[in-house]
Each structure stands twice: as structure tokens, then as C-alpha cells.
Image (cartoon, rainbow, N blue to C red; front, side, top):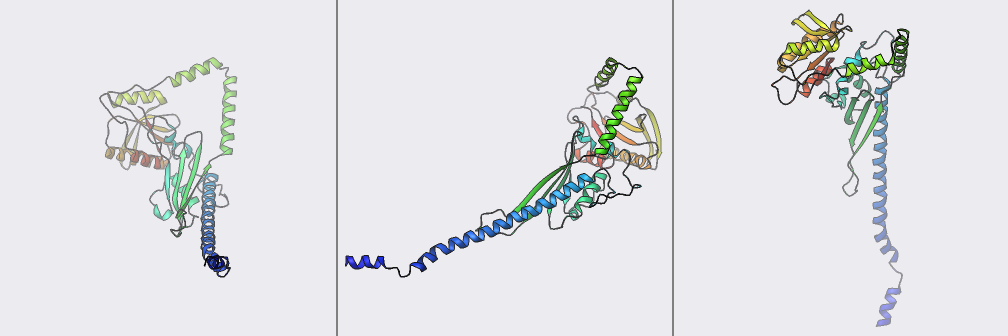
Length: 330
């Protein structure tokens, strides 16, 4: 009996079937997993390609919204406003005492967001309009003076069986820095010309240093009792004078108009409905572009005021979209 049992185990019949039944499912699972893993990385490569191309197109064409998105070709007679870098480039982000430090965001695809028409959004839309509508994500713009960046984050859902332990969505994020070689060279030439002019006028380094310290030591008081006090301080700060203009929304009194045509306005107490009526007047003056080349709103603390200074972040963003720079003195 014992020999018979041993002989049964030594037989080779059915071994192939048994091995196939054990190994084939494993090979099949590995094959399917490899296919879906390849699909996953293929989709990530596609997203990276789209995000990279969109970010680079936006950064390359940032100096002129009229450039062809693909080739960069532009009509020499079509340019953005002269002072767009100062008043339409989310410049309030660079002020450390401001409150608008959030990146400007554009939802993708473009059909999800059609209400924003500021210069920043127009430039981002020009680059994003070539993206397929099947891709979702966000396009960011940030400006911190020393560096300006475009970020594109895309994601896509892919259908993968639950048995395959891979994420059911892929995402990629790409950043591209905005560089303007021509503007950089122009600024260097301006600096060299300015230094040469100081030498011709025999201005010593000590005089320059004293003027520099005098400027940066001219800090605003912690608070003001009245709007007139803040307006007087603002006129001293920018070396400006009172001005008054007629608009279709009524008279607009400017606290301080500087020599560059920049209208500077001081605010202490306010409500946003009052600010909105003032905003409409300033937008009209900006659009005329004859005397007023830019508008800066300064928000100061009143003597008895506590808590946050300035309007809401949403209203500040609305001001910036309309070309008005906001400075919070707190």
C-alpha cells in the first residue's frame, strides 16, 4: 500500500495543467498591470507636454498680449498700454505691507471662466485657449518683483480597474519664469545714464546716500485723526498736488497728483459702495489716458480704528483688475 501511494506521487500526468492553473493568473495580472501602468505614465507625459507648452507660451508672450500665441509674431502698431507693468501686472503683490499676496488664478478649461477681462487674464487666456477642453486644472500668475512666474497645473481622470492599484487620475504642474531681456537692457541703460548724469552734476556718493536714507526714513505715522491729515502726508510722500476732474459719474477730487500723472488717493473710513463709486470715476479717467496715467489708492489707519485696515481681498483684486494699485499702510 505504501509503495502504491509513492508511485502515485511520482507520476507526471496532469502536472502541466496544474502548473498552468497556478502560473497563468499571475502572468495575466502582471501583464494587465504593466499595460495600465504604461497608460498611466503615457497620460502623465501628455499632461506634462500640454502644461509645459502652455506655461512657456504665456511667459514668452507676456510683454505683449497682441502677440500670436504660437509664433510670437506681433504687429508693431499693436501694443499694451505704456504703464501696464506698473498698474496692470498684479503689482500690489510686491508690497510686503499689502494684503493681496494671492496668485492670480485662471480656471481651466476656459469655458469654466469667462467673466475676467483684465490684462493678466487676457494674456493667460491667449495661451490656454489652445488646450483641449478635456483637460482640467488651474493656471496661476505670481509677481513678487524679483521674479514673475506662470504655473500651469493640469489633471485628467483615467478609468482603471480597482484591482490595479494605481491612481485613477493623473496630474502635472509646470512653472515658467517670465523674462524680458529687452526691458532688462533698457533698465540697465537707464541706470547707467542716471549714474552718468549724477557724475556730470558732481553729486557726491555721500549726497546720494543721504537722499536715499532720507527717502526710506520717511515712514507714515501709525494712524491719522482725519482724512485731510492723511492727504497732506500723501502729498509730501509723492510730492504731489490736489487736482479735480469732471467725469460722467460726477466730480473726482484727487488728493495728490504727482509729476508722472499718477493719481494718489488716501482713505481712512469708508464702505465698499462708496469705494465702488470712486472706482468708476478712476476707471473712466484711466481709460481716457490723457492726464491720469495711473491710479494708486492708499489705505491708512484711523486713530480709533482697530482690526484690519483696507477693504476686502476680493475688492482689492477687483481694483487691480481695473488697473488700480492698492497700498496698505499698517
